Amino acid sequence: MALFDLDGTLTHHDTLFPFLAGYLVHHPAKVLRLWRLVPALLRYALAGRDRGRLKSRAIRAVMGGDARPVIEAWAERFVAALHPKGAFRAAGLAVLEMHRSAGDRLVLLSASPDLYVPLIGRMLRFERTVCTEIRWDGERLNGALRTANRRGEEKVRCLEQLREEYAQAKVTAYGNSLSDIPHLERADRALLVNGNAAARRGAERIGIPMADWR
Image 1 (spheres, rainbow, N blue to C red):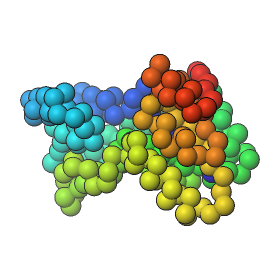
Image 2: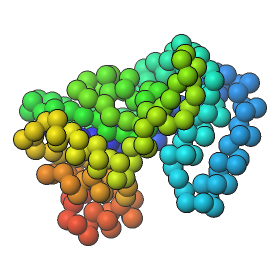
Image 3: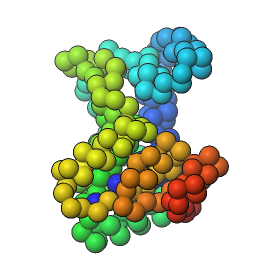
Image 4: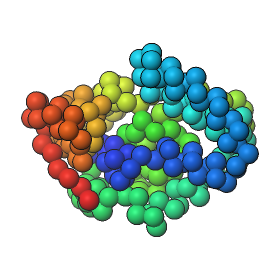
């Protein structure tokens, strides 16, 4: 089984900010709702840096209460444009295809939300996509997190659950950030790609090899 992180590993950059920013471009009246983010940003800076809470507040500020067909239409447009815009790392896609050719089970494991990540998973032909799930109230987006933020130790939990589902499968994991180190450490084989200085120090301490994907 091969587990791939998304943002910064398979892609050159974060995907959530462009997803939300693009939605605002196409729905400019929503900009007036961004004042709702100010308390969340202050709380993030002063009270523990809860990325999951900040992610939820950003999603709610930009598209909370909007109808499912509107958000899904934007998600499809956003994902369709990723390849033409060169969002993906060629080396990462090559490694993905190497695992596919070897017959490995392919899992996309991302902290980014299920508003669009499963579409990326289908586009890249992953067998499974595991990502942060967002709550809906019927056909309207609530924006609260329906699952834990799939980051750090939560990725460890996801990895262990996948091990139970795919008994005997050896796990190769790819990630790029310091928060990926815990689940990379628990994989049978791991590679830190495009890591910053802190991530590289963390990988070096426990003997995880490193590479730069372009």
